[in-house]
Structures are given as structure tokens and as C-alpha cells.
Image (cartoon, rainbow, N blue to C red; front, side, top):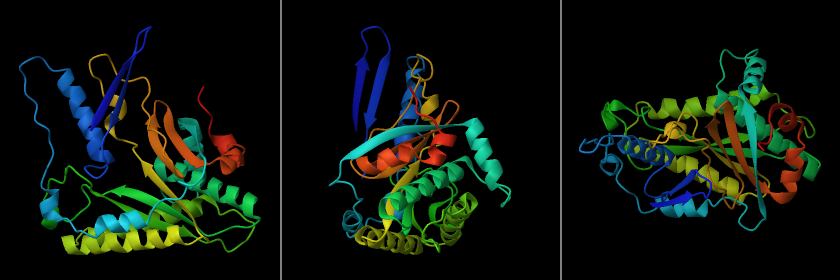
Length: 301
């Protein structure tokens, strides 16, 4: 874990935190920062115990082959010039998206509709470049805490470490030059997520590990297939970073750093969702002009 504090000449502080991903995931990293902030506000002499379980390795013993599989499924973009842009989706835009989608389904979440919109826009960018639709895959991360069988992980599932699953969600268009409906993409994401969650709800640790291996194999195949466009995505929405008050009030802005490959992240903003998109430079030029991106988002100044 590395921490850098930058004091500005005319006031203000920027705090940067970096944690090696092999030691913990986004949930654990955010929880550390949140607990650190709470301790900073406590009076001297008080004690606060971190509310984490540290026995995840006993429930799911380490496997030697797991990291080798992850390495073989390396994201695309390391050989490209990657551009990063931030697109802000305010609550008005999100409500409009949800209203449109909910005409076809009973409920959709903020993360689902924004993820679906960005993914569809990325598909459209590829069609502009290639002249036709191509198969596309989303590498969608879900937090497993509170979702596993109590028989396996117990009632308290607040594990420290990496307790998440990347699931592959593939879309193949039946038309070479048409966009899917937004509710179709949301339904695709919802069904894939619910399928995995239902599978792990009563699964043993070995069965959960098998589900993980199957997902990693599909993702690796996607990365190795030049005919599929694959985009990892991750959401830190509802994580407590925007509430991390170290004693000087809540932060003005919280964001993630860029990555050297194609990916997009979602985070809560003060009035909606911030999407940080990392994409090759040529495609980013097209994405910035995409009709949905222009209509539903804005670039912060």
C-alpha cells in the first residue's frame, strides 16, 4: 500500500492511495480508506477495530494456477495509445434512461443503465470503424460479499481480500448495421449477473471456484479472439469513498487513475455517476461525438 499526500500552495490537499490488487479488491481498498478516515476523526486514546474477516484464504484456499490464468487473459490496449475521458451522467439523465428502459422491464439500476449505454456506444464506435457490427463482450465485475452460501462463508461475509467475480457478457448482433435497444442490453447484463448469483447462492467453495475458472476461461478466449471486442468494466458506486472525512469535511472530488488498456469505471459523483473511459485514441475521438454520449453526459470542466 502506498500513500501520497500533496499540499497545495494556496490551500487544499490531494490524497492518493494505491494498493496492490493481489492483496485486496476495490471493496477492501475503499473500506480501508473509510476506516482510516473514521479513526482520524476520533479523539486521542479511543480504539476502533476494523470490522473485517481475515480468513478468506481458509474458506477459499489459494490455487497456484489462478494467477497464471489471469495473466493469460490480459486486457487489450497495452500496445495502443490510450486516451482517457471522464463523462458525467447527472441524475436527470439517469432518470430519463431508467424511465425509457423501465417501459420494458419492472426495474433497472443506475449502474445497469449507464453501463449499458456506454457499452452500446462502444459497439457503435466499432461499427463506424469496421463498417459493420462485431461481437462484443463485457467483462463485468460483481462483489460476492453477502451473496455466497452462509454454509460456506458464514453469516458475516465482510471478507478482506479479493472476493469478487468477473463475468463475461457477450452480445452478438443479428443485424450488421443496427443498434440494440438499450433495454436489451440492460436485460442481457441483468440475466448474466442473476445467473451467476443464483449459481453461487448455495454453492460449495469448490463449486464457486469452478464457476470462477469457467468465467476466466471465457474471458481469456475473448481476449484471444481478434473477432471479439472485449471491455472490462468495474463500478465503485455505493462504496463510501465520497464520505471519507479525515477531519476537514468530505472530499470535493474522488476519482480513479487511468489504466494503460481499454476499460471503463463507474463511480458516484455528487449529482450522479462519473464514468472514466480508457480507450484507444482513434476510437475515443468517435466516442466523444457519439449521439448517446452527447445527449446524456457532459465533460466536467
